[in-house]
Image (cartoon, rainbow, N blue to C red; front, side, top):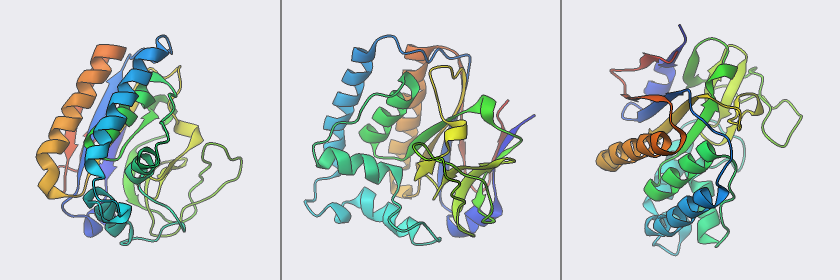
Length: 235
């Protein structure tokens, strides 16, 4: 049985972090009604503006907290959290494109609640999934590239037995495990580093689960992992 395990190397850096996990089985991720997801994203973009009130973008609380987090481990130059990338686009009045239903849903939740959120096709996983520090030789190819770009030693990554799944914690995902229209079993994470936002985090995780269930069906399980509850079965 496959597990998701958050290892001690991660907790040594981020002892107060929380990782919300949604495991989806039997969803229908086929693209059918694109207008529905355009509307979901559009509404979320408007809500995202509440999180970037300071005209000095880097001083907004969400941006600053994740930049501070990224300073605690070695990262690729210019790497930023996924939520910063989304909020930056919104602040520049660049709309978020639709991709496929599940990605559109998690992007909308990420924007609405201002937490990094990502997802992978669970059927592509090899062995257990770990959130840990990289050895530095993990295989990794990201979308839009055919070049292997392994993480730095000590970088925070999600990984399985075949290599890195997501680099710099939530910066870039592997093309090997990405969600597609054909995904029926998915693994999603919502990530918290600011303890003061725990209630918002729980609300966002619940909303994410409900939105997936309402639109894509399937069977879902939801867990919040922390330093005392650091591994779960995902099969």
